[in-house]
Amino acid sequence: MGHHVVATTSEIAPGGNKVVTLEGREIVVFHVNGQFFALLNRCPHEGAPLARAACVAHLSSDEPGQFKRTRIGEMLRCAWHGWEFDMRTGQSYCDPARVRVRSYPVAIATGETLAKGPYVAETFPVTVQESYVLVHV
Amino acid sequence: MADVLEQPPARAESPNANSKLKVIDCDIHPSLKTRADLHPFLSKRWQQHLQTYGGHLRTPFTSTTPYPRSSPLLARRDAWPPNGGPPGSDLAFMRRQHLDPINVEFGILQVLDLLVVSQQNQEFGAALQRAINEWQIECWSKPEPRLKASIVVGQDNTEAAVAEIERCATTGKYVQVNVSPRANEPLGRRRYWPLYAVTEAANLPLGIHVGGYGGHAPTGSGWPSYYNEEHHSNAHSVAAQLSSLVLEGVPERFPKLKFVFIEGGFGWAPALTWRLDKHWQRFRDEVPHVRRPPSEYVRERFWFTTQPIEEPENSGHLRDVLEWIGIDRLLFSSDYPHWDYDDARFAFKTPLTEAERAKIFNANARALYRLG
Image (cartoon, rainbow over all chains, first blue to last red; front, side, top):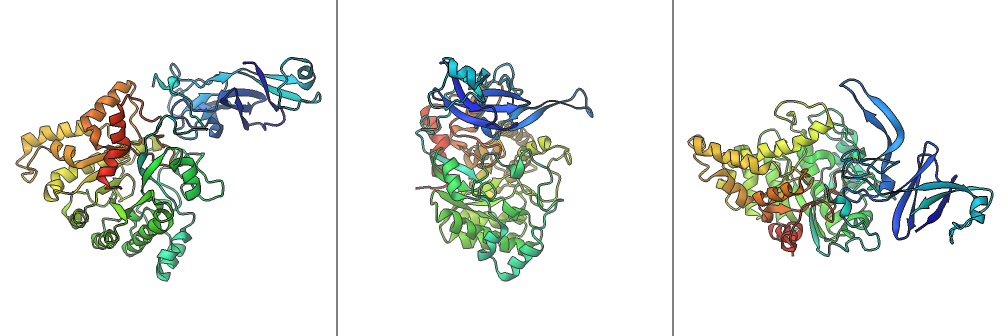
């Protein structure tokens, strides 16, 4: 339990992701619209890796012929059956009341803070010049 | 779906840890890397035709389907082989991504490339079906003996189909004859009966995999607008074919022939047979050759593959449907590498006993296809 340094902020390109294994769990970290989100790398429907999901907009419609695109890039569309999940919360749009992907808190910290603090990952070389993505598991 | 969060996570280190059962997967789609893969099995004349003209179907578009799909080439987005080529075209990657982790003991090949069953140039179609059938053996069954080939034939050129079934059956290397549920006429029509005679004589099941374009709208109500609608029409098509086969008297005329509906769903089957029985009792003088209630033919002679698995809100309802059809008449299928793939470990969200799992995931197909 605790914070894990998983990447530098520049390492994950916007729209991209990185898969890490933390405390035995495969977790995928997404970078979208300047923010980072961490989710369990497994679709709760049939187990597909969410790292291979398409990052899409939320498309909704109030009536036929009208549509709205919102939350651009923040919806995950699973690589297999197309189940959609909110990247921020892991909530399912197919079955929001009952299904969600486990999500994990993410923080950004400067190397300077990390070098002083108790959260330095054993295996990740931290330098004071950069910023880092931390996932709390 | 309430219980999905309680399922154990997929374990990369031991992918089949919660399924020691060996699986027989009755629907795997191999693909050509390029059309030139067929050249060794085509004469120069048809190689040139394939290169110059390509296929001729009764639908618009030559390089995609009439209904653009939700994912490129219908495939899981993680199924594109790292070394290139379309999904399903790389045997080593298929082993690594599907056959090994799912513990596939045998896989039944279903070829959709070039929609051989729907080619309108019938001479070309005959050359193509022969090439596809040889390609399955040379490029898939030989290097990977777990993969079993189906004799793919376009039934509208009945004479060529009969010859191809006879040619392939004598090799003993094929486990099934495949025809399309969307040909020019319903499958029960007498023009197709010569196919059933040779299939029965070869002691092979008749596989009916969804797809193909015979020129008719995919629904009885006309052309739908969306892929969403068209996808369901697979079920309507095979339901109509079940009625046609039974009411035209095919199971009656060919008492040893077995029928397998592949990828057409199965939730519709119980309600259809209830209705068929009801009407058969009232109008049996219209079809006196149907000597027994339709449900009896279905119960004894028809099998259904499970993918895409039905997903009712209440998972207990899935259990009811499985029982109505018969646990011994369901065959697990994955549809690898397509987007609506079912993972053998997680697809069935209803309780099954070990004995029932053994039937659906292995024993039923082993007996039907007479696998070792």
